[in-house]
Length: 389
Image (cartoon, rainbow, N blue to C red; front, side):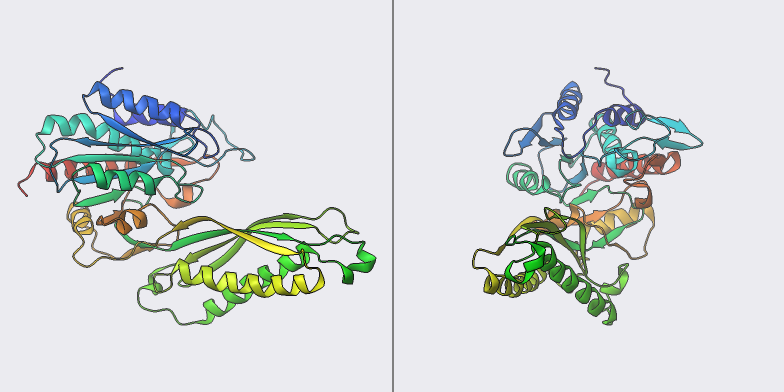
Protein backbone atom coordinates (compact mmCIF):
# COMPACT_ATOMS: atom_id res chain seq x y z
CA UNK A 1 0.00 0.00 0.00
CA UNK A 2 1.24 3.48 -0.85
CA UNK A 3 1.95 5.53 2.27
CA UNK A 4 1.41 8.94 0.66
CA UNK A 5 -2.30 8.66 -0.12
CA UNK A 6 -4.16 11.95 -0.22
CA UNK A 7 -7.49 12.49 1.52
CA UNK A 8 -9.13 12.47 -1.92
CA UNK A 9 -7.59 9.08 -2.74
CA UNK A 10 -8.59 7.67 0.64
CA UNK A 11 -12.15 8.91 0.12
CA UNK A 12 -12.36 7.10 -3.21
CA UNK A 13 -11.23 3.89 -1.54
CA UNK A 14 -13.65 4.19 1.39
CA UNK A 15 -16.60 4.92 -0.89
CA UNK A 16 -15.76 1.88 -3.01
CA UNK A 17 -16.75 -0.35 -0.08
CA UNK A 18 -20.58 -0.73 -0.12
CA UNK A 19 -20.90 -0.59 3.66
CA UNK A 20 -24.68 -0.32 3.84
CA UNK A 21 -25.67 -0.94 7.46
CA UNK A 22 -27.28 -4.29 6.69
CA UNK A 23 -23.95 -5.57 5.30
CA UNK A 24 -20.57 -6.26 6.86
CA UNK A 25 -18.00 -3.47 7.00
CA UNK A 26 -15.04 -5.79 7.58
CA UNK A 27 -13.50 -5.30 4.12
CA UNK A 28 -13.27 -1.56 4.82
CA UNK A 29 -11.91 -2.21 8.32
CA UNK A 30 -9.26 -4.53 6.85
CA UNK A 31 -8.15 -1.78 4.49
CA UNK A 32 -8.04 0.89 7.19
CA UNK A 33 -6.12 -1.41 9.52
CA UNK A 34 -3.55 -2.13 6.77
CA UNK A 35 -3.28 1.60 6.01
CA UNK A 36 -2.59 2.43 9.64
CA UNK A 37 -0.14 -0.45 9.97
CA UNK A 38 1.77 0.89 6.96
CA UNK A 39 2.38 4.00 9.06
CA UNK A 40 3.36 1.98 12.12
CA UNK A 41 0.07 2.61 13.93
CA UNK A 42 -1.64 -0.30 15.67
CA UNK A 43 -5.43 -0.36 15.45
CA UNK A 44 -7.83 -2.19 17.74
CA UNK A 45 -11.08 -3.73 16.53
CA UNK A 46 -14.29 -3.91 18.52
CA UNK A 47 -16.64 -6.48 16.99
CA UNK A 48 -20.39 -6.79 17.15
CA UNK A 49 -21.84 -9.88 18.83
CA UNK A 50 -21.99 -11.79 15.55
CA UNK A 51 -18.44 -10.91 14.50
CA UNK A 52 -19.71 -9.60 11.17
CA UNK A 53 -18.90 -5.92 11.78
CA UNK A 54 -16.27 -4.03 13.69
CA UNK A 55 -15.46 -0.59 14.98
CA UNK A 56 -11.83 0.44 14.99
CA UNK A 57 -9.79 2.84 17.10
CA UNK A 58 -6.15 3.87 17.25
CA UNK A 59 -3.80 6.18 19.13
CA UNK A 60 -1.41 8.20 16.98
CA UNK A 61 1.49 9.75 18.84
CA UNK A 62 2.48 9.70 22.49
CA UNK A 63 0.56 7.66 25.06
CA UNK A 64 -0.46 10.65 27.15
CA UNK A 65 -3.73 12.33 28.07
CA UNK A 66 -5.04 15.51 26.50
CA UNK A 67 -5.35 14.41 22.88
CA UNK A 68 -8.14 14.83 20.34
CA UNK A 69 -10.45 12.13 18.98
CA UNK A 70 -11.54 12.31 15.35
CA UNK A 71 -14.68 10.19 15.18
CA UNK A 72 -16.76 8.99 12.24
CA UNK A 73 -18.94 6.09 11.20
CA UNK A 74 -18.25 3.68 8.35
CA UNK A 75 -21.79 2.63 7.41
CA UNK A 76 -23.99 4.27 4.81
CA UNK A 77 -27.66 4.12 3.84
CA UNK A 78 -28.92 2.04 0.88
CA UNK A 79 -29.07 3.26 -2.72
CA UNK A 80 -31.89 0.95 -3.87
CA UNK A 81 -34.83 2.86 -5.29
CA UNK A 82 -32.79 6.01 -5.80
CA UNK A 83 -32.09 7.47 -9.25
CA UNK A 84 -28.32 7.95 -9.40
CA UNK A 85 -26.63 9.56 -12.41
CA UNK A 86 -23.31 7.88 -11.56
CA UNK A 87 -22.09 4.72 -9.86
CA UNK A 88 -22.77 5.48 -6.17
CA UNK A 89 -19.69 3.54 -5.11
CA UNK A 90 -17.31 5.41 -7.38
CA UNK A 91 -16.36 8.97 -6.45
CA UNK A 92 -17.02 11.24 -9.41
CA UNK A 93 -15.77 14.82 -9.39
CA UNK A 94 -17.91 17.31 -11.30
CA UNK A 95 -18.54 21.05 -11.03
CA UNK A 96 -16.66 21.37 -7.75
CA UNK A 97 -18.47 18.45 -6.12
CA UNK A 98 -17.52 14.90 -5.14
CA UNK A 99 -20.43 12.55 -5.87
CA UNK A 100 -20.81 9.13 -4.25
CA UNK A 101 -22.61 7.33 -1.45
CA UNK A 102 -21.10 8.46 1.82
CA UNK A 103 -19.04 11.35 0.47
CA UNK A 104 -21.05 13.70 2.68
CA UNK A 105 -22.26 11.31 5.41
CA UNK A 106 -19.58 10.72 6.44
CA UNK A 107 -16.70 9.05 4.64
CA UNK A 108 -15.45 12.50 3.66
CA UNK A 109 -14.53 13.19 7.26
CA UNK A 110 -13.25 9.63 7.74
CA UNK A 111 -10.87 10.16 4.82
CA UNK A 112 -9.68 13.48 6.24
CA UNK A 113 -9.02 11.84 9.62
CA UNK A 114 -7.03 8.99 8.08
CA UNK A 115 -5.05 11.31 5.82
CA UNK A 116 -4.05 13.22 8.96
CA UNK A 117 -2.21 10.22 10.42
CA UNK A 118 1.09 10.56 8.51
CA UNK A 119 0.93 14.35 8.95
CA UNK A 120 0.56 13.90 12.70
CA UNK A 121 3.44 11.44 12.86
CA UNK A 122 5.72 13.86 11.03
CA UNK A 123 4.64 16.85 13.12
CA UNK A 124 6.10 15.79 16.45
CA UNK A 125 2.94 15.52 18.51
CA UNK A 126 3.06 16.28 22.22
CA UNK A 127 -0.43 14.86 22.71
CA UNK A 128 -2.06 12.14 20.62
CA UNK A 129 -4.48 12.18 17.74
CA UNK A 130 -6.97 9.35 18.20
CA UNK A 131 -8.99 7.81 15.37
CA UNK A 132 -12.40 6.24 16.07
CA UNK A 133 -14.50 4.63 13.31
CA UNK A 134 -17.79 2.96 14.21
CA UNK A 135 -20.44 0.82 12.50
CA UNK A 136 -24.27 0.87 12.50
CA UNK A 137 -24.62 4.58 13.19
CA UNK A 138 -27.30 4.85 10.52
CA UNK A 139 -29.55 2.33 12.26
CA UNK A 140 -29.49 3.82 15.74
CA UNK A 141 -25.87 4.58 16.71
CA UNK A 142 -25.52 0.95 17.76
CA UNK A 143 -21.81 0.38 17.20
CA UNK A 144 -20.22 3.30 19.05
CA UNK A 145 -20.95 2.64 22.75
CA UNK A 146 -18.85 -0.51 22.97
CA UNK A 147 -16.01 1.17 21.05
CA UNK A 148 -16.13 4.26 23.27
CA UNK A 149 -16.06 2.11 26.41
CA UNK A 150 -12.97 0.28 25.21
CA UNK A 151 -11.28 3.54 24.24
CA UNK A 152 -11.98 4.96 27.70
CA UNK A 153 -10.53 1.81 29.27
CA UNK A 154 -7.44 1.36 27.10
CA UNK A 155 -6.39 4.73 25.65
CA UNK A 156 -5.13 7.86 27.39
CA UNK A 157 -8.13 10.12 27.99
CA UNK A 158 -8.58 12.65 25.20
CA UNK A 159 -9.44 16.25 26.04
CA UNK A 160 -11.84 16.59 23.11
CA UNK A 161 -13.84 14.41 20.75
CA UNK A 162 -14.63 15.84 17.31
CA UNK A 163 -17.52 14.03 15.64
CA UNK A 164 -17.29 14.91 11.96
CA UNK A 165 -20.92 14.72 10.89
CA UNK A 166 -21.79 17.15 8.09
CA UNK A 167 -22.30 20.57 9.68
CA UNK A 168 -20.92 22.84 6.93
CA UNK A 169 -17.92 23.24 9.23
CA UNK A 170 -20.07 25.00 11.82
CA UNK A 171 -19.56 24.19 15.48
CA UNK A 172 -22.60 22.23 16.71
CA UNK A 173 -22.80 21.75 20.47
CA UNK A 174 -26.27 20.24 20.82
CA UNK A 175 -28.45 17.56 19.25
CA UNK A 176 -31.65 15.79 20.18
CA UNK A 177 -31.71 12.42 21.87
CA UNK A 178 -33.49 9.53 20.20
CA UNK A 179 -35.18 6.25 20.99
CA UNK A 180 -36.87 3.69 18.76
CA UNK A 181 -39.27 1.15 20.28
CA UNK A 182 -40.25 -1.81 18.10
CA UNK A 183 -43.92 -2.56 18.72
CA UNK A 184 -45.65 -5.85 17.86
CA UNK A 185 -49.38 -6.08 18.43
CA UNK A 186 -50.79 -9.62 18.46
CA UNK A 187 -54.55 -9.66 17.82
CA UNK A 188 -57.16 -12.38 17.40
CA UNK A 189 -58.35 -13.34 13.92
CA UNK A 190 -62.03 -13.64 13.07
CA UNK A 191 -64.12 -12.91 10.00
CA UNK A 192 -64.59 -9.15 9.77
CA UNK A 193 -68.37 -9.59 9.81
CA UNK A 194 -67.87 -10.65 13.44
CA UNK A 195 -65.14 -8.18 14.22
CA UNK A 196 -66.56 -7.44 17.67
CA UNK A 197 -65.48 -10.94 18.73
CA UNK A 198 -61.93 -10.49 17.42
CA UNK A 199 -59.05 -8.11 17.99
CA UNK A 200 -57.59 -6.28 15.02
CA UNK A 201 -53.90 -5.69 15.65
CA UNK A 202 -53.87 -3.08 12.90
CA UNK A 203 -56.79 -1.08 14.28
CA UNK A 204 -55.41 -1.27 17.82
CA UNK A 205 -52.02 -0.18 16.51
CA UNK A 206 -53.74 2.81 14.96
CA UNK A 207 -54.70 3.91 18.48
CA UNK A 208 -51.02 4.12 19.42
CA UNK A 209 -50.21 6.02 16.24
CA UNK A 210 -53.06 8.40 17.03
CA UNK A 211 -51.55 8.81 20.51
CA UNK A 212 -48.33 9.90 18.78
CA UNK A 213 -50.28 12.42 16.70
CA UNK A 214 -51.84 13.86 19.85
CA UNK A 215 -48.46 14.09 21.57
CA UNK A 216 -47.01 15.91 18.56
CA UNK A 217 -49.87 18.41 18.63
CA UNK A 218 -49.43 19.01 22.35
CA UNK A 219 -45.67 19.36 22.07
CA UNK A 220 -45.97 21.78 19.16
CA UNK A 221 -48.35 24.01 21.14
CA UNK A 222 -46.03 24.24 24.15
CA UNK A 223 -43.65 27.22 24.41
CA UNK A 224 -40.04 25.99 24.15
CA UNK A 225 -37.36 26.73 26.70
CA UNK A 226 -34.27 28.76 25.72
CA UNK A 227 -32.11 25.74 24.80
CA UNK A 228 -34.98 23.82 23.18
CA UNK A 229 -35.67 26.86 20.99
CA UNK A 230 -32.35 26.25 19.22
CA UNK A 231 -33.73 23.13 17.56
CA UNK A 232 -35.87 22.75 14.47
CA UNK A 233 -38.50 21.86 15.44
CA UNK A 234 -38.15 23.00 19.09
CA UNK A 235 -40.19 20.14 20.52
CA UNK A 236 -40.00 16.36 20.92
CA UNK A 237 -41.37 14.50 17.91
CA UNK A 238 -43.06 11.08 17.82
CA UNK A 239 -42.93 9.25 14.51
CA UNK A 240 -43.84 5.95 12.82
CA UNK A 241 -42.13 5.49 9.47
CA UNK A 242 -43.38 2.06 8.36
CA UNK A 243 -46.16 -0.29 9.39
CA UNK A 244 -46.97 -3.86 8.39
CA UNK A 245 -49.73 -6.24 9.35
CA UNK A 246 -52.92 -8.07 8.49
CA UNK A 247 -53.81 -11.07 6.37
CA UNK A 248 -56.80 -10.06 4.25
CA UNK A 249 -59.37 -7.30 3.99
CA UNK A 250 -62.08 -9.47 5.55
CA UNK A 251 -60.07 -10.81 8.52
CA UNK A 252 -59.26 -8.94 11.70
CA UNK A 253 -55.49 -8.53 11.68
CA UNK A 254 -53.52 -11.04 13.69
CA UNK A 255 -50.30 -8.98 13.69
CA UNK A 256 -49.16 -5.39 13.37
CA UNK A 257 -45.54 -4.20 13.46
CA UNK A 258 -44.04 -0.72 13.61
CA UNK A 259 -41.32 1.25 15.38
CA UNK A 260 -42.34 4.23 17.48
CA UNK A 261 -39.45 6.69 17.35
CA UNK A 262 -38.86 9.81 19.44
CA UNK A 263 -36.45 12.70 18.91
CA UNK A 264 -36.23 14.41 22.27
CA UNK A 265 -35.38 18.01 23.11
CA UNK A 266 -32.74 18.52 25.85
CA UNK A 267 -35.28 19.44 28.54
CA UNK A 268 -36.92 16.01 28.14
CA UNK A 269 -35.32 12.59 28.34
CA UNK A 270 -35.65 9.52 26.19
CA UNK A 271 -36.42 7.57 29.37
CA UNK A 272 -39.42 9.77 30.17
CA UNK A 273 -40.83 9.36 26.69
CA UNK A 274 -40.28 5.62 26.81
CA UNK A 275 -42.27 5.49 30.06
CA UNK A 276 -45.08 7.59 28.59
CA UNK A 277 -45.31 5.40 25.52
CA UNK A 278 -45.29 2.17 27.50
CA UNK A 279 -48.13 3.53 29.64
CA UNK A 280 -50.14 4.12 26.46
CA UNK A 281 -49.24 0.61 25.27
CA UNK A 282 -50.48 -0.88 28.55
CA UNK A 283 -53.80 0.92 28.21
CA UNK A 284 -54.39 -0.34 24.66
CA UNK A 285 -53.25 -3.86 25.60
CA UNK A 286 -55.71 -4.01 28.50
CA UNK A 287 -58.58 -3.21 26.14
CA UNK A 288 -57.37 -5.87 23.69
CA UNK A 289 -57.20 -8.53 26.40
CA UNK A 290 -60.69 -7.66 27.58
CA UNK A 291 -61.90 -8.99 24.22
CA UNK A 292 -59.49 -11.94 23.95
CA UNK A 293 -57.06 -12.98 26.72
CA UNK A 294 -54.26 -14.00 24.34
CA UNK A 295 -54.08 -10.64 22.64
CA UNK A 296 -50.98 -8.68 23.65
CA UNK A 297 -48.42 -6.04 22.72
CA UNK A 298 -44.68 -6.75 22.80
CA UNK A 299 -42.13 -3.93 22.77
CA UNK A 300 -38.38 -3.89 22.27
CA UNK A 301 -36.02 -0.89 22.43
CA UNK A 302 -34.15 -1.03 19.12
CA UNK A 303 -31.97 2.00 19.80
CA UNK A 304 -31.48 4.64 22.45
CA UNK A 305 -29.21 7.60 21.79
CA UNK A 306 -28.53 10.32 24.37
CA UNK A 307 -28.71 13.92 23.29
CA UNK A 308 -25.67 16.18 23.09
CA UNK A 309 -25.94 18.88 25.74
CA UNK A 310 -24.13 22.21 25.50
CA UNK A 311 -21.23 21.97 27.97
CA UNK A 312 -19.98 24.60 30.36
CA UNK A 313 -16.26 25.27 29.74
CA UNK A 314 -16.24 22.75 26.90
CA UNK A 315 -12.70 21.90 25.76
CA UNK A 316 -13.98 20.49 22.45
CA UNK A 317 -16.11 23.53 21.72
CA UNK A 318 -13.35 25.96 22.67
CA UNK A 319 -10.89 24.19 20.36
CA UNK A 320 -13.30 24.08 17.43
CA UNK A 321 -14.27 27.71 17.86
CA UNK A 322 -10.65 28.84 18.14
CA UNK A 323 -9.79 27.12 14.86
CA UNK A 324 -12.89 28.09 12.88
CA UNK A 325 -13.73 31.47 14.40
CA UNK A 326 -17.36 30.32 14.62
CA UNK A 327 -18.83 31.77 17.81
CA UNK A 328 -22.48 31.30 16.91
CA UNK A 329 -24.71 28.71 18.57
CA UNK A 330 -25.79 25.76 16.43
CA UNK A 331 -27.93 22.74 17.26
CA UNK A 332 -29.27 19.93 15.08
CA UNK A 333 -32.32 17.71 15.37
CA UNK A 334 -30.66 14.54 14.12
CA UNK A 335 -28.88 12.23 16.56
CA UNK A 336 -25.16 11.46 16.41
CA UNK A 337 -22.52 9.59 18.36
CA UNK A 338 -21.46 12.86 20.00
CA UNK A 339 -24.02 12.34 22.77
CA UNK A 340 -22.57 8.89 23.41
CA UNK A 341 -19.03 10.28 23.72
CA UNK A 342 -20.33 12.96 26.08
CA UNK A 343 -22.20 10.40 28.17
CA UNK A 344 -18.93 8.48 28.52
CA UNK A 345 -17.18 11.53 29.94
CA UNK A 346 -15.63 13.08 26.83
CA UNK A 347 -15.97 16.74 25.92
CA UNK A 348 -17.66 16.43 22.51
CA UNK A 349 -18.68 18.64 19.63
CA UNK A 350 -19.91 18.12 16.07
CA UNK A 351 -18.08 19.72 13.17
CA UNK A 352 -17.51 18.33 9.72
CA UNK A 353 -17.65 19.06 6.00
CA UNK A 354 -20.87 18.84 4.02
CA UNK A 355 -24.52 19.72 4.38
CA UNK A 356 -26.89 17.26 6.06
CA UNK A 357 -29.40 18.10 3.32
CA UNK A 358 -27.21 16.09 0.91
CA UNK A 359 -26.98 13.05 3.18
CA UNK A 360 -28.97 9.94 2.21
CA UNK A 361 -29.99 11.51 -1.11
CA UNK A 362 -29.57 10.18 -4.64
CA UNK A 363 -26.43 11.74 -6.14
CA UNK A 364 -25.12 12.47 -2.66
CA UNK A 365 -22.29 14.98 -2.87
CA UNK A 366 -19.67 16.85 -0.91
CA UNK A 367 -18.30 20.13 -2.20
CA UNK A 368 -14.58 20.28 -2.81
CA UNK A 369 -14.48 23.56 -0.90
CA UNK A 370 -15.98 21.92 2.21
CA UNK A 371 -13.66 18.91 1.83
CA UNK A 372 -10.65 21.21 1.70
CA UNK A 373 -11.97 23.22 4.66
CA UNK A 374 -12.19 19.96 6.62
CA UNK A 375 -8.60 19.12 5.74
CA UNK A 376 -7.44 22.57 6.87
CA UNK A 377 -9.39 22.21 10.12
CA UNK A 378 -7.72 18.91 11.00
CA UNK A 379 -4.33 20.33 10.03
CA UNK A 380 -4.92 23.00 12.68
CA UNK A 381 -5.82 20.30 15.23
CA UNK A 382 -2.45 18.70 14.55
CA UNK A 383 -0.77 22.05 15.16
CA UNK A 384 -2.69 22.34 18.42
CA UNK A 385 -1.48 18.90 19.50
CA UNK A 386 2.12 19.97 18.91
CA UNK A 387 1.79 22.92 21.28
CA UNK A 388 2.65 22.80 24.95
CA UNK A 389 -0.37 21.91 27.05
